[in-house]
Length: 236
Image 1: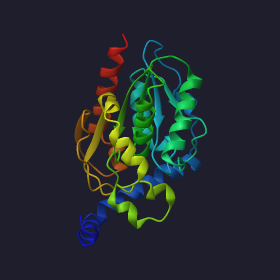
Image 2: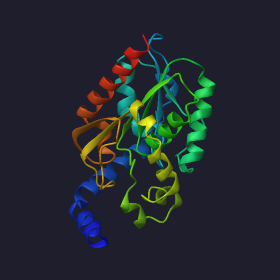
Image 3: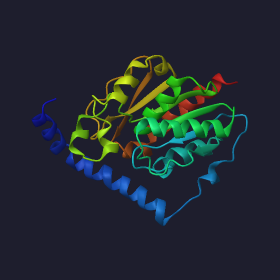
Image 4: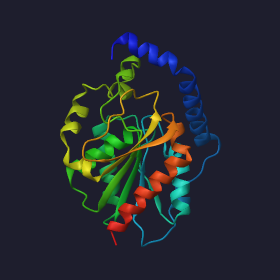
């Protein structure tokens, strides 16, 4: 896509982008104004796999709270990655933190549920193959092929999403891990112009719009829960 085409697409989707980032801002403010201890979601059915939330760049677990709340209501125990903060480290470093968290929670069956960058971190952990107890990953709005729009943001944490980034290119080659991934994408993502299907993965398009708003959409919650239930059944 040419620069001109990109700018026209950004302008065309500006109302959605403003609504999307407005929602994200409110979710982030809630982290500070209405704090909720993630440990409140740790209770649940011990026979079910543990859910580990992996948020996106500049996000805390609170961005994924609608999903956490829905899965917890279905009996799943929810865990958040210790020390991740707002997830601004490089993808590789974030994946190392995720791997360390998986080591800390032990050998219980685990399902990763990720948003955006969190899906890239999850795929890196799956590709390493060092955690066989991880049944798979459900990744929502993850830029597996990167995003051309990253060129318009100067912060290193976002620039890492450029399609020619070496980390992304290396992850693209790790096709075996794709079979353990369910990729859920909105019908329109103003942050990711290319939402091509991930080869070998289970790909689901939900009738939701927005990179962040998709996280609270009913169709997304249903898709995530269905994917989690399917993976959980493999552990029985």
